[in-house]
Amino acid sequence: MWAACEKSMNQTNSSIDCLYVDNLSWLRQLIYRRMGCSELAADLAQDTFVRLLRKPQEFDSQEGVRAWLSRVAQGLCVDHWRRQEVERTWLETLASQPEELVLSSEQQAILLETLYELDSMLNRLPEKIMRSFLLSQLHGKTYREIATEMGVSERTVKNYMAQAMTHCLEVQMELETSQWFQ
Amino acid sequence: MTPSNNENNLPDFGILEQAASWFAHMQSNEVTDDDHQRFQAWLAEAKAHQYAWHYVEKVSQRFSVLHQEKQADNASNTLTQLQQKTQARRSVIRSILLAAVVGGTGLIGWQYTPLPLMARAWRADYRTGIGEQKEVVLADGSHIWLNTETAINIDYNKQQRHIMLIQGEILINTAQDRHQRTFLVSSQHGVMQALGTRFSVYQSTQKTRLAVYEGRVAVNTKTQQHTLTAGKQVIFNDTDELQLSTANIQHSAWIKGVIVADQMTLGELINELSRYHYGYLGVSPEVSALPVVGSFPTNDQERVLSMLTASLPVKIRSISPWWVSILPAD
Image 1 (cartoon, rainbow over the protein chains, first blue to last red):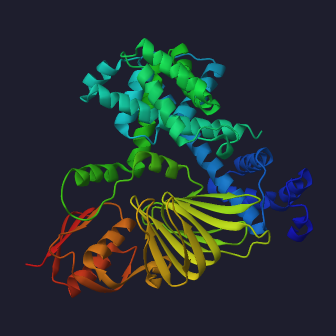
Image 2 (image 1 turned 30 degrees about the horizontal axis):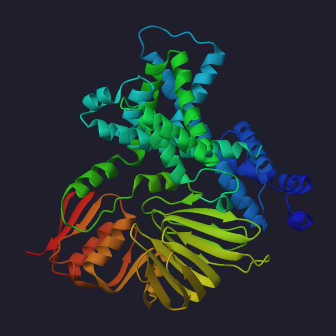
Image 3 (image 1 turned 90 degrees about the horizontal axis):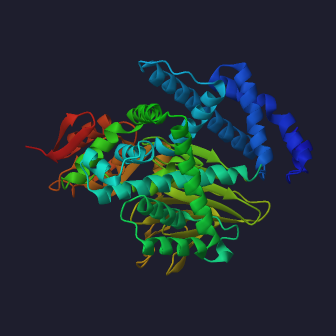
């Protein structure tokens, strides 16, 4: 099948159609082996091709196509697990509260999406840096209060804030630039 | 920054850092009118500064969503929990050791990777963890082997094939490209252009080592330029003279999972081996200059240690499985 598609490798819609037909069931299989759920595998395989439509790639060979597809699919699987983990942790946090929290499903969706995005920005930061960032941005504490609470100087807190924000900006830029290709 | 190297006005890492440091400053209680003016001037200076600031606002908006929903405390708990789970999985041991090693001891062993570099590695196209190795086949059929703790980004476009080595070590076998594009590898210390070939590149914090096994590779640093032929290697950073020497084919033995020691000292071997293992592996100065010969597996530290005690006047002190020192035998 590859030979039939080879001529139109330069990112026209027909070449993407062709890639889709040639690789969809292979990709579903690949994801199914990782995730163990065929519906999810079908969804994630679709999402992988949506990425390709948004941000066209150039390929030189069938191996190149499959290497790209499997890499993107793997990223989507990891995202999916992470979203599940964010949701689970959020529900655990709520469950440990004395009073029950009533949220509309829309509020819940917004909160989970926000938490997922913040988690992807913050969770790799060193613990102290993340803690001072949360104390400032979520709890509205001043640098002096944070410095006292954490036993460091105000200058260090300010440094932590800059480091945390730099890292968030890198992630934010990546999020936005990948959206530009939609 | 000049418009020519940044046509789409996207901020580079340096500008993101500037924006973040303005953010950190503007939140402190020491902001003066003068600061406000300087900030406005910075903002007006370049389109890329405005983009960077727009990202700052986007990040802040996420926090305000949580405030509006009155969920700051729950959100904070959730995010902290998530971070603890992740870090427990990945790197708690490592950071404890880091603190311990950076804090004292003259033993050879640990190398601290600066945060921005690590942050970039986390999101690289391909990466390996400590002790992991991986083979990647690129779109044009070129092969890249990633050694332990390595991260690369790949950018193939119409004009060139570009591999950015963010950290660690790679061995490359380039394929003939039907579009005749150039093949470039960049490290933070310079850019290398392959002229048909097999070569390896190892980047540490201070310097980059390029060894050419087949074909030729041209190196360009900020100050110098040199074309290397097969059998040669060069160590460079962006300021000093290039250090040329003979390439050691044994440096590429890692793709088979072994370190081949020939004219290596014990200190060098342990330094090499510690790249493949979590935890601290150190050698005391009295024995670090002892010569070692042999092939050592990269994935079996215990076996290497017993090979060493069998052939050298050394003993092993192991406080825990992840804290091992090599000392002179009694």
